[in-house]
Amino acid sequence: MQEHSTKPVHPVEDEGLLFGCILDGDGGAQSIGWAELETWSEIDKPLWVHLNLSEPRVQSWLAQSSGLSQVTSEALRAPESRPRVFHGKRGFVTILRGVNTNPGSAPEDMVALRIWSDGQRVITLRHEKLMTPLDILNRLLGEGYGPRNAAELYQSLITRLTERIGVTVDTLGEDLDGIEVRMEIDAGTDLRREVSEMRRKLVSLRRYLAPQREALGSLLANPPEWLDGASRLRLREAADRAVLYIEEIDASREQSLVLKDEISNRLAEATNRTLYVLAIVSGVFLPFGFLTGLFGINIGGMPGTNSSSGFLIFCGVLLGLLIAELVAFKRLKWF
Image (cartoon, rainbow, N blue to C red; front, side, top):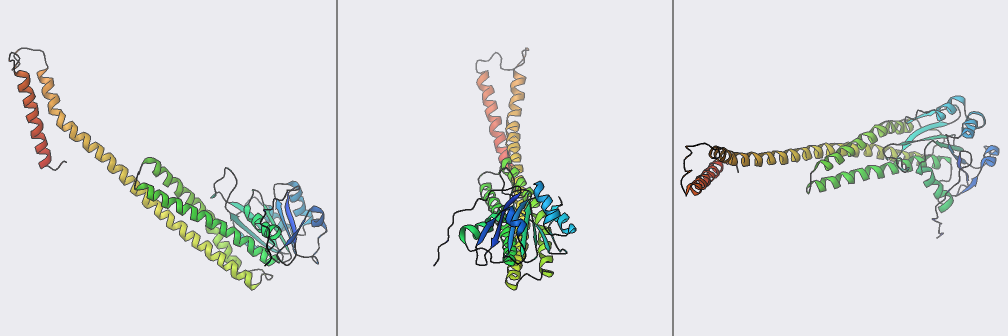
């Protein structure tokens, strides 16, 4: 059995060309630069280029040298990145979103991946860094068992993009389960804030995934003619997983609402219990405060002022009053 290298590939960006490669038809590829890209023709082996839309040379190449129609070029360069698919004049356009793994960014703040293909060329574009194309590139250049043609490459990009979303959905679900376990130990305000933040992430992720599910459904309903049967089957599996992820997100949202209500109820119970104890303590010492205040006034005629046992008698009265209050509270089931 042939062993494949697992050393990760780290391409160097060249004026917006993040990487480019020619598929060899056997799961591998050969890296190319701008010069090879400019001279490539349809009689050559399948081409894949991954471009940074923020670079002027990329914008110029798309508009003037890519061979794409004006409508397609403008759609790929447009700032709006709502997930959608459509047949262009010379190829098929797919715009999807993937999880954001960039440092300092939240995964639910998703990044758009724009894909164009005519069955022989695959052009992928992004503004922010996205790991999915690098995953596929490592299979091609680092491991040697990547896509063999443009249809497989197109399908692999969408499948891997969906898989990475699944990892994020699973992580959020596990975090929510962890909060539920911790709630049995301490249901404090910090935990309530965590649940609220988790629910915000779930709502944000679902807002992005819902149109993605619709886009994948449209793709399966009207796929490009160059997409083979095996690739269509795997794309259907990816679309089914996207539906499953949305269902899991909805279930996690419901779970977060239940947890938030449970934490709020426990906090309210703890507050009421504290107020209840304070009320009992106040009820016990209120008569004591009244009596000590009354006998503490400095005027004549107070009973027991001239008796040597007056203090002990007063303490006995207070003790008897305390016992009477405790008995009354017990009968009233206040504690």
